[in-house]
Length: 269
Image 1: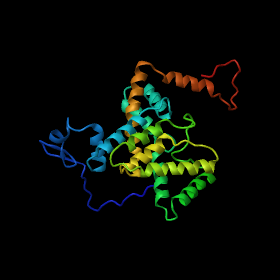
Image 2: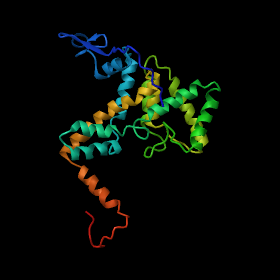
Image 3: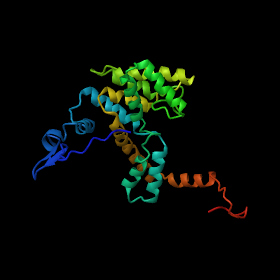
Image 4: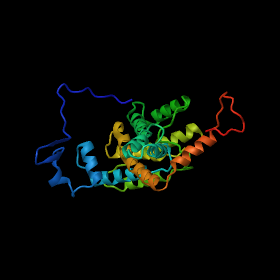
């Protein structure tokens, strides 16, 4: 859990203001300074973090957003398609349904991986001792190991080395968190007695830490990226529906096992 800062007794906002003639995002004039002059990624970085992005920040964040946008018929995409099938007049509801699945098991796990990295790197006992202690504790508790393992990409997730390559090619990126994650990976393989890939969300955690994005808002970038992917699923669902097939498949492959006295020749409706 992340601690919430106490609310000021006199709250203010620095995000936006306007007059009848002018609009401002933070302290920048929307019409004169931003529209047509900055990309969406640059604007998003500036608006969320409150500082002008470096070239490295934009390149790395772009790579992350592209990486997380799509991963097929995962729970988020299935939820979106089923909701759109039920309420095609409410596209926003379908996208929202999918975004509710950006959590600690799928897509949004980078924040936990980042928290693990920060814990190990700041521990007074030193990196090696802390890494072994933290990983062993996760295994003993039979918990999820954030940033490691993948049900499909074995032995390694192909997205991970590419994200590292992109990040390390940028000026000003030292690779501190990337190298730390690789060090934790060595400990993971030793403790688990087998190789567990650094998955894409683990790599995302490291590269976002490299550009100063705090762990507690990292999942927000996954939400932004996946929203675009879910709109693509809605567009495809509109033209070539799969929701009814998903529904029918579920109904026919998960049998009723209760005690109702249903004749054997009666098809369940």
